[in-house]
Length: 216
Image (cartoon, rainbow, N blue to C red; front, side, top):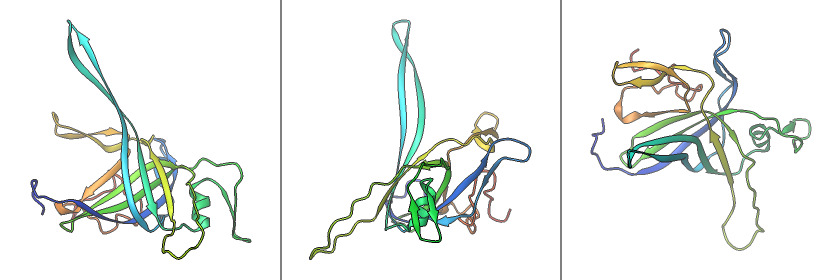
């Protein structure tokens, strides 16, 4: 198990997968449900940024408190070329299996979960699921063939938001030492801890409520 002060850097990413979010509510017969997990694209790079804002409030002629807010996550995925059927699916377009054509008509809004795995220089992995979001239409650039070896792949932007579904393992209350219910944006598991059962992590969309400890 890696120590808290162990020096490492991030170097490696793989297993970028996607599943459509079919249900996201808190009804008796609903909850958070997704479709089958599919490979999204062979990945070269995955990045994450999160919108955040902060404002300082003044009382009694002095700065007395900070109010902070966290916005959506933006996941950037740079990978190889993508097959046209998957491209149509994640962008809410129609695909004609009889002709192999993407029909660029009106967009249908679909929500997805995105999973991937990152690696560090010590050989440890972090397993990730972003539980709900949408893809922006990817930018495309194709250059002429020349005497070089350059090519272009796919650049995707996934905007991750909170689920509507309230998970039992949403927020850990330090005062009561208990888990409280909350909506969730994502799940990140550090394999170096050796605590979680990660054998089926990408077989389905793993959530805070379905993740199990080893031997559980």
